[in-house]
Image (cartoon, rainbow, N blue to C red; front, top):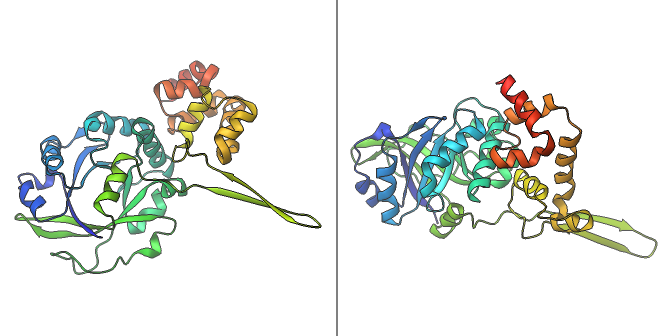
Length: 313
């Protein structure tokens, strides 16, 4: 099934949202930008879309400050998480690390992975493999001439999307609707699947690592899988919960974390061995979250690291 979904912001202020909803399968709207901007139309439009019970998405226009912007997005959209798909709109120059920091922070706060929006040619500049694995990709690309009606074309940008799960294609910014020229997309989701992305019920892939040992008489296969209780959780969340003691110690921790054990312990050991200066730079890059998450993960080094962060900022 393909869903016909336009997206609008304050640039289309005054548009009749009810008309747009009547002529489409759902609607995506702008919510926030950077660390201090909220779209003036967001709440009014969001309430109408939620009431319509049609697929709903809301996006944050990213300016490159991972955790800080994620907190702003969450603060202003708190009541809409799990009612619609949260989307990170990546259009301006930024680091892959900051994109990941935003994604991880929203997941820590809500249990939901954002969908990421980016132009086809910029995906591999701004989006790393970690994010590709966890987030649906909404790809922008406008064949010439721009379409003013709903397209029937097949998605033409697969050369840019290796490793991605493409959930939607924004194919034009010129769709004629409700007296405006607006952005429009095809989403390759059923309504049920849309809701899974919105609520966090979408199941991530379960990673399986196989090691094969050959003996004189037989071959045995040992399989290590990601336990269901941690499937889909970010590395930041796993490290945080490990530091809280939720996965025990020793053999118990190893069993609870499955094939994530080595990666989690690598982060924990890195923190214990690393200098305060290096950890402070990693904090600024958004690697260890904020608030109680950062305090727990950094443990006894928290005060010294935070002092250095304040000096560097």
